[in-house]
Structures are given as C-alpha cells and as structure tokens.
Length: 333
Image (cartoon, rainbow, N blue to C red; front, side, top):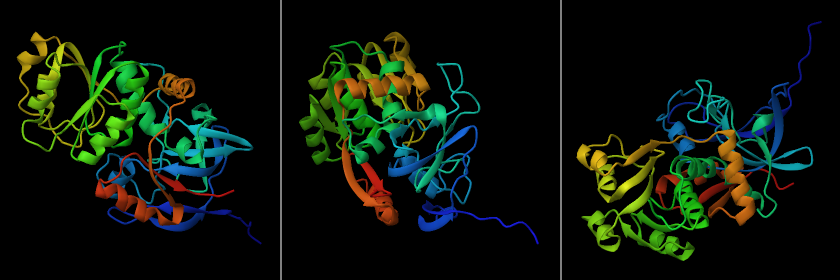
C-alpha cells in the first residue's frame, strides 16, 4: 500500500491568475521549516502592491499566489507583527539581490497561517489593537526609511507630503510631526486635506487644481527642506521647484510614470539631493517600531472587512476613497 499524505487545510485569499478577482478558498497550510516560523494570522492589511499584483502590474508575477504583506499574528501565545521586507542583506544603503517582499513570490498574509523568517518577527506594540497592529508594517517601514533614514530630518524643518490619504503618506505625516517638523500635504480631495489638517498638518493644497505649486509657493516662500513623494510623473518637476536650497526629496513610488520637464539647473544650483527609497532594512523596521512605541503612534484605519469579503476591500482601494489603511479580519479567536 502506498504512503498516505494528509494535508491540513486553511482558509485563504488566492489570486488564481492575472486580472482575476480574489478568491476565498481552502488551501494546504504552510509547513514549518528550520528557516521559517509559522504564524497564526489574526488580522492583515491591504497595500496597493496587492492591487497591482491582481492587475498584473507588478514585477516578478506568479500565479496562483496568496497576497498580503502585513499582519498581526500569533507565535504560540505571543502577539507579533511582521517586517514584510525579507532578506535585506548586510548593506544598509541598499537591499540585496535576494531581497523580496512577503506576498510575492512567497505566499503572504491573506490566510489563516503564514510562514515568515524568524528575524522578521517582532512583538506587537501593546497600545495597538489587532487591526492597528496589522496596519503598520509595509507602509510604516517605507515611510520611516524615506523620511528618517534617507532625508535625516531636523526639528523645525518644513516637510511636504504628496498624495495624503494612502498608508505611506499618512505615516510620513505622523512621523514628521513626531520629529517636530512643519508638515504640508497635497491631495486631490478636500475632505482628505481637512482630515490631514485635523491630524496636525500646517496646510495643504489640491494638486488637482491648476498651478497648485504656485499656491504652495505663496504660503511657503522659502520652499521645503524635505519632500516625500510616491507618485513621480510629470509633476515631479514641480517638486524640484518647491525644494529650497539644500533640500532633500525622497521618492518611494512611481505610479505617475516617468518624470519629465525637470530643469537640471534647479537641481544642481540649489544643491538638491534626490533619494530613491524602497521598503526598509531590519534596522529601519526596528527604528520605526521603537518610534511607534515611544510616541504611541497609531495608524489611521479606513475600514475593516472580513477575510471572505476581500473583494469588497479591493474595490474600496480601487475607488481611491480610502483615508488610511484597509484591514482584513481573519480570525475572531
């Protein structure tokens, strides 16, 4: 008689193929190994990365895949969070060729169980509930590296955050305020500007209006010491104009596409530094987590959905109506 193999099943969200909507299905549980810890997921959070994977707009695509990079989970009785950037390497300046983000190519957190390298597991901040703890990982470490590790802010400096409402931009706002910066924001919607002002931003403009940069120049004639941007595109040239002499610009995303019409003289004459920034190292994540615990920072939560309603959560993200993180509740236990 042949050997019998028994597979324990779990509920998970699977993207079966390019352009397919998320499916709530049963799949085999991940197997623990010497290199990986198996965690029980309580809550997890969406990132735009998950949406781009579903739409086939991300590098290194493979299907089927369980997406998800963030989670509040349990290792035994210990409540933990995850640094989703794995295998960074030894060079703090740049990630190693082996670097990858949880949720592609490895199966991610939109499931009852997930495998994660032991070094990427950290105690969850005690002041955060399960939904909040799930929402800090990818967005938080990305924001911390872009603003703190790359741009090295000094108390009293003026910061501009573009596209307020997304998870990274909101964390940049919160971290900037924690460092004593004067923070301004841009958005396409008045209600998002108002919410940012309520959080402590000093001002903001609608980038959907003509000559929005002129409006900012009138308010901040000396320009901005630091600009953190996740859009790029043609509007990046306006950010170069808005940077003050000696200013720093960090770019962590490029949804707007190629940058154009940049005047090089504005970069070299003002001695502007432009930093690319992707995710973060273990040191970045540890530094971010220490700040969260010290300042009792809490992520902005837009909405919470059951895991089986993940497609509705994706639709919420696609609408661009959200302000803050969209969270999935995997287990009530």
